[in-house]
Every structure is written in structure tokens, then in C-alpha cells.
Image 1: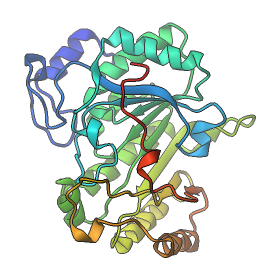
Image 2 (image 1 turned 90 degrees about the vertical axis):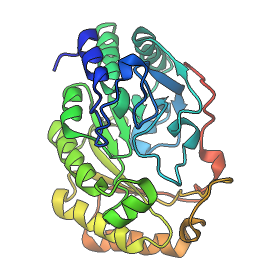
Image 3 (image 1 turned 90 degrees about the horizontal axis):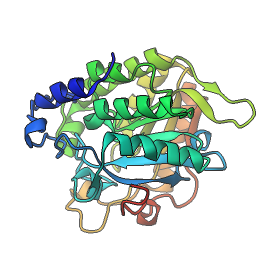
Length: 307
């Protein structure tokens, strides 16, 4: 699908990009469920070293954090940008320049964080940048709550998809993310992502992923049963044709009003049990986290660096 300025205006006039299907008239100044209008807004563009090793390498991932989000999880680790409290409006040409600037800084790839509600604008800017010499792999980094028809816009533009698969249970997804249809939408989105990229491909010289899907799952307190169902689903559906990143970095942020059951960090024992389960069911291609990743200090400052 070719994205033009006219196409963008048409999509923004009646926005159905995400599963919320809010029909916001974003070109007229109305904000969608994501909290954003039609103007592209981003909060940070910089080299990022805290992604999976196959994305960071030695030089870091060229990460662009977009403002707003269609999920708004109550425990969100990137709350200031998810709520649209920080960020700067930029033109589509400026975004293309940012991509090229990150390439000049020797970024391993271009990493688009929470891009779904600006998807046609980003597609347009990527096309511009590619015409000007952008040749890095493009990583689509998302909470997983995506609309398949929207993802098709990125077919041929994205090389690596990195979605979350947060919940199997509709009860949990309704309680913590106000999205009872989360698993239905996210699992269909991952199927489309896999269709576009296929099995993983790595650069033999650097070990960096050039193509493929990495599904992230962050453990939540008291949700071990749900985590096991997610891991079993992923392995029974894709085997080792995708990578699974099992994360222990959940951090109840200071000031967040959280239910008691998730107002704590994951214990080492809880994490080890899930890793053992993943190994037992046959998951070989994956990542796990070591050390004290559950710290607020690991969340980057959303200070408009590079924007």
C-alpha cells in the first residue's frame, strides 16, 4: 500500500488504526484513545543499549519513542509518554532526518517504539529516508495490541517485529489494560508479523537480527499461570521459528495507584520457575534477563533528546 499525504489525511479523518476503533477525527484536532491528534509527536530519539542483544550489538539500537499509546496499562513502565505528557511535534520530513541521523551515529537498526497510532506517518517518513540512503533494519516495537489491516501498511518496510504478548486471560487484560480482547488481537497481529518476516535471519558477522519476530513477555506478580499459557501458545504455534524474550523487569513505579497483588516486583524464584517451564516445553530460541533489571533507573529520560 502506497502511503501519500492524502492517504494519511484520509486515515486521520476517521481513525481506526488500532483495535479501539475510536473513529477520532484527528485531522480536525480530535484526539484518539491513544491521546494523540494527527501531528506526529515523539519524546526521544537516541542510541539505546537495553534491548535484546541481537538488536543492540555494540553500538546500540537507534530508538525513537513516540508519544501516546492505545493500551495505557495501569502499570505502564513508560507512563509519561504513554499518557502523552511529554513529547514534541515534528514534521514527517524531520522524522526522516532523525532516522538518517541515527544511522550516522552507527545505530544497529531503527527501533520504533509504540508506533501504531502514527503508523501511516511513520511509513511515509521511512519511505522518504530510504530514498535518501537509510539502509538499516527497521524494528517495530509494540505492546502487541494492533490491528492486522493497519500492520499491512508496514509490509516491506519493517524487518523485525518485536511485539509484547502480555496476557492470555481476557480477565487480566481487562483489569490491567482495559482491553478484554487483547489476546485475540495480539495473537492475530503476531501471525501477520510472522507472515511478513518469516523465520529469523541473523548477520553472521555481527549476530544482529536482520529479519524475524521477537515476542516479549513480561512477568506480572501472581500471574504465573497466565505466563505459562502464553509460552505454551507461542511454542505450539511457532516452535522455534520466533524468538521469545521472557522479562523480569516489571517495576511498580512510585506514585502509581496499583492493586495490591501487582504492587511488588517479581521474585527470583518466580522468574526461575517460568524459565524452567519454557525450557521444559522446548523453547530454545529466546532471551532472559539477568541481574537487577527491575529498576526505575533503566527507564530512559523522555527529554526530547534527538527530536
